[in-house]
Image (cartoon, rainbow, N blue to C red; front, top):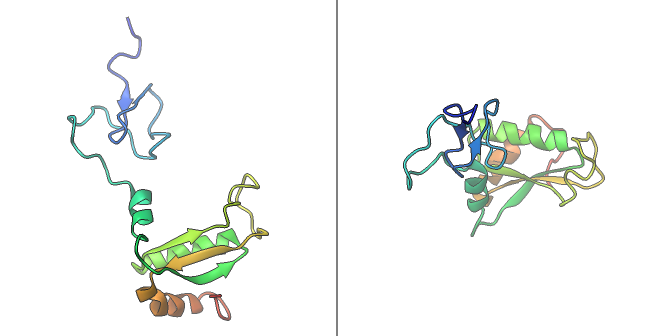
Length: 134
């Protein structure tokens, strides 16, 4: 007899099964559910995938280039709050240090769609001194 029977939780996206005590899918990052949706039912949207796909076929521009990962994410938060689609792009060395660092030797770029550049620069200029872009 399985001591956990009836107490397993499931990821609605990848359908993985988790023992009690887990609340989040370690692969998908979504909340676990007590029962799986029917086969073929669509799980919650993958925000990271949707954000990545939103850049396909666009001409993104950097509105902030900074060695500070923290500043890059603060800027991203301001843009998200203003409903401006954006993303923080690193150099590929993100996580090299194993933690968030105040000043990394590689720049972080806050990217927006070309159509949102003027609005994004105006918003960030009120928070960051000088010219935030390249």
